[in-house]
Image 1 (cartoon, one colour):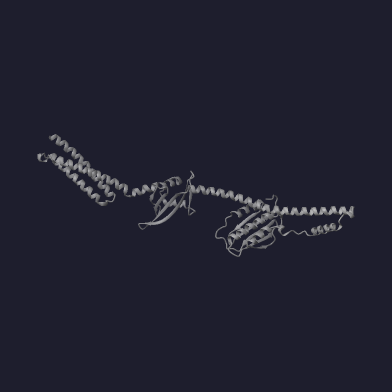
Image 2 (cartoon, one colour):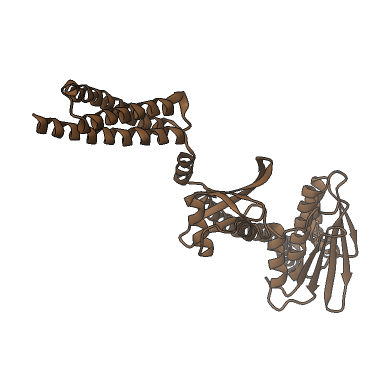
Length: 409
């Protein structure tokens, strides 16, 4: 009977030791979680109860007493109760971990975000960096974010909104903000995945380039059509004159052969009309160079002040006409009220120098040669000329055109 009592006592003792360890561990966990609701105190009391039960078993082991034979049964019941309490404490700790938001939980959450995040103090010392930002820095610089300030300066060199495209086609846009934490300035660096937007923007730029080329071809075709129409009208007039002269000559020949068979009055009328036509060698208004561009400017309410004479060479008319159209468009777009376009032409030894200005305010920033200006530059350089665009102290477009063109554009 004594041996059974000793074995039972030893088993209960080990059981109590395990319970003490569990309760002590739950005390630490509750303290780490903030100790809400007095949970650490309750776990500590349960630990003391388990220690008291251990002392009772030790006393029974060293001091055999028949009156104490009931202690193992009491301790066994207490062990069962404490075991249930320990299970409850463990479940409580698990539940607190799942429900409570800890610093580690915040870090794990930030590591799962698709956005790169970095918080750092003045000088570049990092306070918090998620895995995404470390991964981006590793792919860009070959190392993680160690000096955040240097990393930011590298990204933002020469731009306020940097966009970085990696080798695999992934693009990131970076943003920087400043705030305060505990009275100290802190910096926030963010990286956003803009790969899809970057690809769409690249495709849009390609389409804009294609559209620009098509637009340039259409403009050139439109210029050609205008001159083709004028040439066709001129050809029709020449054909009419040719037919009129032919009819006149035939009637004259018929009159010389058989005067009685020819209407003398009609013959003389043809002679008078053709002689008058030959005397009048002036062009019609619509046949004069630059008629369409100057008329278009007038219809838009733009007054053109011309100093000097525009080039009359046939090979230059089309190019100068395009320059006038581009200048009128820019005046209409950028000048506020009182539209006046100034065109100054000077004949030089090797060609012409033309200056285009307006009465508008100077550009706020350097003029970018896009659209009409870019197309005009290509046309002028194609015929051997040069084009200069100045933004200060006022807008000025200067063209140097050769007098003779070996190959027409």
